[in-house]
Length: 398
Image 1: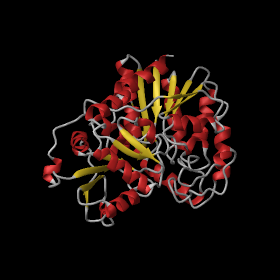
Image 2 (image 1 turned 60 degrees about the vertical axis):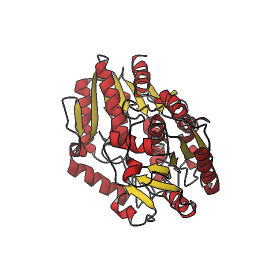
Image 3 (image 1 turned 135 degrees about the vertical axis):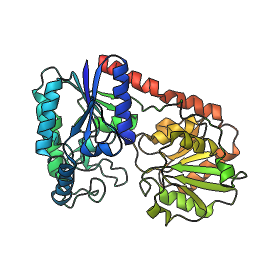
């Protein structure tokens, strides 16, 4: 069996997911290629199973055209034609799509090619909502439901992928034209929340399967940690937040508000804060730059008493799983698939924007004996990397 997987990056959360699945497929005796936009060489060393889509110059040209004129994903014509020639030579049995937005790939050309293939199976793992909206990958903050019928006057043009032109009506129509009519297409979502959104969209007649993301729990597990000692907070209750894209979407404002009302027995620690963000962070919050050392991150999770995730838009945040695997309970806003990760024995979810409820949940967990390391780990076992990859292998072979 031959599988080609396509994603924006070979690194980051979605890139890691694609690589893990491709490695699992090869271990099961399949041939598996991965394809990504041209700038992957910055962080990943390619091999014979790595396909480059386009050039760095072409990528940046397409991104600029998208900002100026909208219609993102309809440029990079020649790069896409060249990539499709590579696909035709490989003759994959399965084309596994992940994120195909931004501007590295001309998706109308891709789906024209897909519809010409007689025996090709297509699996499309959705990591957000872009596939069925006219512009945005998320619409929770904007509280927009136009995607259910026909996008127009998009309220999210200033968010990723940014555009000066409101092309949402055109792009919604184009996506329907391209994505409908594929004979053998299955969608996969990491959360039940996203599955329900797909079933409300123009993609509703396709089969949709939920496969929860999984993490490597040989890395993320309770580890000996001197983090509190290093930062002189051994006698405090440590509240931890981890993100690699902090801002309003990830609830940074909520955490800052918490820092103003919590007494001195608590200490907030944020991981992933960049230099610019750090200037606006209150001095009573400990900030840690982004770390690519997963063992070090597991040690920080282990040191924490409560993991706080006031995210306002999320599909299925793996940081929640990482925290549970390290034995630390979670408090999160009940948005997207975030609350699906926890149960009553390992965390609490509250309505988005409910500051007092968020604070009360933290205080309740700190004062309770019910949220043990074991109860958190028991829940995390539902989301192991082995279960995740095996579910996909079963799908490939079905």
